Image (cartoon, rainbow, N blue to C red; front, side, top):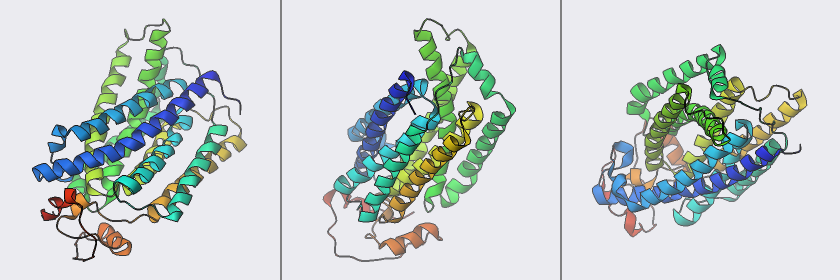
Length: 349
């Protein structure tokens, strides 16, 4: 399809955003390791010493730059176009993790990266045009329609269940708990980001939207969701392998965001059945690529969580992360990097 000017701007901004965000995963992970080595308390078990680590803040600034670009992208293009382009951040983080974190990327993982790119291209080609919005009150009417209110209520209940019941029991043995909380909150934050971004865009065009309380409400929702995402994403990164967290987070976040956008903004209204099917097929290709990338990685707990145990084989680590959480001693001849010596002396919780 031919891109409109707004869709092109959103597309370019989404690509830049994914590059910055993908790199931020690696920088923040290095910062989390340093903070844990210094304080002896990991973010995955409630430590906040990473807030004093400059490298973590560098990663945070990099992520903020990416998120700002993403924020602006949502003001120009529909979420169905912008969100799937986050697949690039998976590729960036997986490649950088291979070189800087020693988290191995296998040949099939490279195939998974290629599939993510191909699927994203298919989605971009068939992406819908952005529907013109004239005021924040118009967005508010979309957000308060019964279907989206039901979605918001469902997300809120699921997040409370995950935080109160599942996180304390199996958050450190099942990667889906922390990433699930991030993804659910993320889908609401994207809808609020799009609403807020559109409001600011209209304001800069001379139609002041800051006088409406709805604009400030969307801003409050964005702040709440982003803070929650940051806390639980840090827990996920500190507890599990980066190349495992990134694709799973992407799959869940993208699926929920597209669902929320289709419900709230009705992105597929006016599109032919064939175009919608093509978008879904492209999305399935992206999901398949992320799953392939995930399945071919060394599915092991991060060194900051392993404590005094050496790395385990992929098959064993898969059982440990999905089973009852009992860790078995497993020896190998690899030399421990100096920055991880202190981490291996910690007890496994």
